[in-house]
Structures are given as C-alpha cells and as structure tokens.
Image (cartoon, rainbow, N blue to C red; front, side):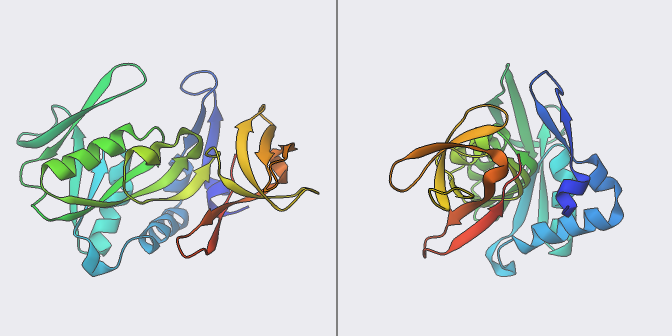
Length: 236
C-alpha cells in the first residue's frame, strides 16, 4: 500500500448518495505523510526562474500552496469567496452543479507579467480552477500550469483550463485514456466506457473491444510529445 492509498480515505455516499468523497484529513494529520505530499508536489513545479506566484482556491488549496510558496520564496495569492476581502482586485463567477459561486483576489496581488501556478487540493469539473485562470489573466498575469493533489479523471476538468495540468493522485479514467491491461488480446488498449462498478469496455489497436474487470488495469499510460511513455497509477 502506498502513501496515498493509506492516508486518503474514501467515504461512500457523501455528501449525497452515489458520490465517492476523497477525504484528505488523515493525510494532513500525519506529519510524515503531509511532509511527503509537499515534497511530491514540489517536484512537479517548474524550475525556480520560470514562475513567480501560486494562486490557490479557498480553502483546502491554501493548505498545500502556502508551504510550497514559502519553501520556494514565491508569492501566494489567495482566491477567496466573495465578501471575504476588504480590497478586491478582480472577481470571477463560475457555475456549480446547482447555482453559481464567485471568487475574488486581493488588489495588486498579481502584477502584469507574473507567471502563476494554479493550485487546489482537487480538480473535478474544473470550474473553480478555470475561474482562477481567468482571474490571473484579468490581472495581466500568465497562468502557466495547474497543480493538484487529486484529479477525478472521469470529469475531464483539465480540458477547461487550456494549460498543462499535473495531479499527484488520479482516480477514475478519461474516455480514450491509454491503458496497460492484462488481456490475451494485447497489453495496451483505450478506455471506452464504464459498464458497471466493476467492469469497463476497452478497445485494442485492431479495433476489437473487450469488457474487462477493473483489476485487470495495470496503469494509465501517458504519451509525451517525444513519444516517451509515462505510467500513472490507476486508482478507482
């Protein structure tokens, strides 16, 4: 069992039936585990001279962005819920499943030309992360990447951002994710659809399909621009 399997707790049917809630509080309450999380996130940051600030979403994004900004001697911009700031520089409203939410950043917190990392604990549909991208651009800054502890891949929130996105822990699958699988038909296949809670449909290079159990998925395979294959641990 790795660090994240041990300390990220899945709570079923919270906050509503059918939802798997990824609870990070056990991860935060263990000092060694929390330190390792920060180190893992830090490894994914660009080199020191290629970025200036981190913008983080209220409130769990603050937990991870603050130590990262501090150890890199970079600025931290707080994207706060509406009404929390005395001097608002910019505000952005985005859609929720039911209704809307507004986030704001402090006046003068981002200067024109600042190269900014977008950060939160989790990216799902990408609404709040896209709002931070828009806030950075409104202020004249340049959003250069999104960095998240957790990504819910099936919701494809990364598509809204228009910038590179890196996540440490991935749950679920995007349609057309390339997978390393255990099958007599081949070792590589694309994820096509979820059949039920235990099985998925995959497509092989020859166009044939197969329904396999999730425990036959070895890893998610990411193809880099140079053709290099990077393996991402599959978590359901």
